[in-house]
Image 1 (tube, one colour):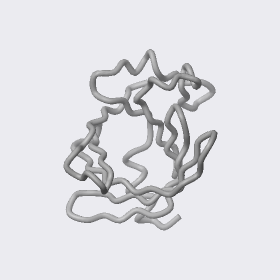
Image 2 (cartoon, helix red, strand yellow):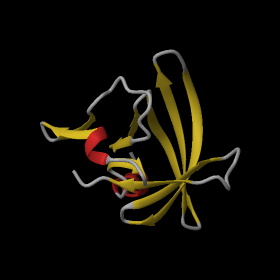
Image 3 (cartoon, helix red, strand yellow):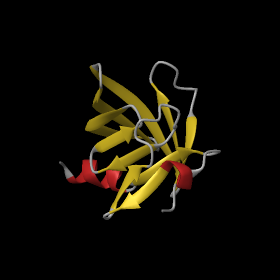
Image 4 (cartoon, one colour):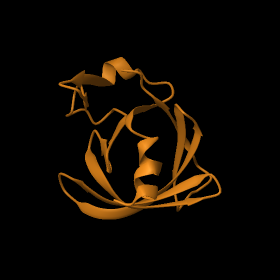
Length: 119
C-alpha cells in the first residue's frame, strides 16, 4: 500500500452511520475491533472501515486504488457479498473529522452523509 493511499484511508478508519441512525444499537467493540451487533441484519446503514476494507451488513469491499482531486477521494473497490463479486467506484468527500459524504459515479449529485461513531 502506497503512503498516499494509506494516508487517505487512515482518516476514515472506524464505524460510520447515516446521520440519523443509532451507533450503539448497530456496532460494538470486542477484543479491540469494531463489529456489527447483528451481522445478519439487512436493515443497517452502517459501514466499518478497517485498513483497506469497507464492510457493510451485506458485504465487503477492498479498496484497490484511491485518487485525490479537489477535496474528493475516488475509491476503486473490489466488492463481494454472499452471491456476487463485482468492482465498483465511489466518490467520497471528507466534510470534517467525523462527517463524510459518499456518492457513486452514476449519480454524483446524490450524496449520502455519514457520521463517525464514537465507540
